[in-house]
Structures are given as C-alpha cells and as structure tokens.
Length: 156
Image 1 (tube, rainbow, N blue to C red):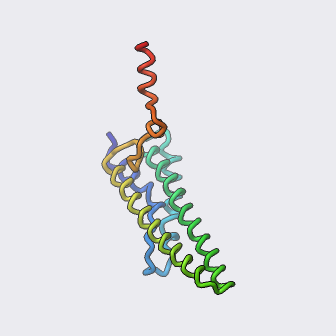
Image 2: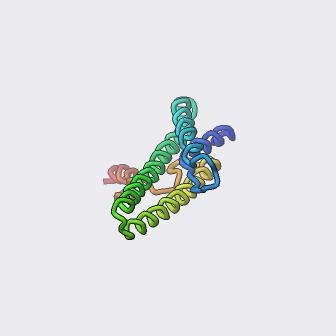
Image 3: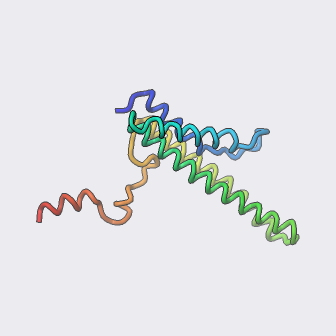
C-alpha cells in the first residue's frame, strides 16, 4: 500500500500532460505546465527507481504520457501552421476552413488529454498501480493472456 506522500508524488508526475486551451493567460499554456511537468516526472523517475516502485511506476507513466500528449498537440500545431500558410499564400478559402477545423481539433485533443490526465491522477491518488488510464494489458489486446498460457502448460 502506498503511503500518502508517495501518492502525492505520483499525482504530481502527471502535471506535464495538463494542457488547458485557454486564451486568458498572457503566457502560453504549454509554458507553465510542460517544461516543469516533464522535469518533475523525469526527476521523480530517476530518484524513485530503487526507493519506491509505486512512485517510479507513476513517474515513468506520467513522463511517457506527457511526451505522448504534447507530441500530439505539437503535431497538430505544426499542421495548423501549414494550413495557415497555405491559406495566406494562396487565398483559397478551403485552407482557411481546414485551419479552423484543425484549431478545433487541437482544442478538443487538449481537453481530452487533460481529462485523461485527471483520470490517471485520480487513480494514482487512490494508490492503484497498473496502467494509469485503466487500459488492458498488451497481452490481452493480442488475444491471449501470458499468465494463463504458462499455467495451462503444466496441466498437459
């Protein structure tokens, strides 16, 4: 069972994936969450590898999750830049519409990523291990369970 302090550290390791697409701040949203969150998750993972398997597990999962979410949002941002430049240089209204659709997709991806991050934080706060988002293990996705195969071999 994880101690309360370990649970707090596990929750903090997911902060690098929080992206709220709000235009209310004068600082871009990625600047106050991504670099400190990635640094915190990296330091927690390095520091807790031998001391606390619970914190190390969630720090590694938080680091990978933040890299995935921010990579997706970066790709959408770069694609939006391509659409904007195409519209600016050609004047074709279709590129403007595609640019606006891409902006909506970015907002929804940021909101969904933040909601899934909140779910992972909730599971870490409860002290659960396993996949932070509750996804099935890769062996179950492939259609077989590794543990069942090894136990069934002894029966034959």
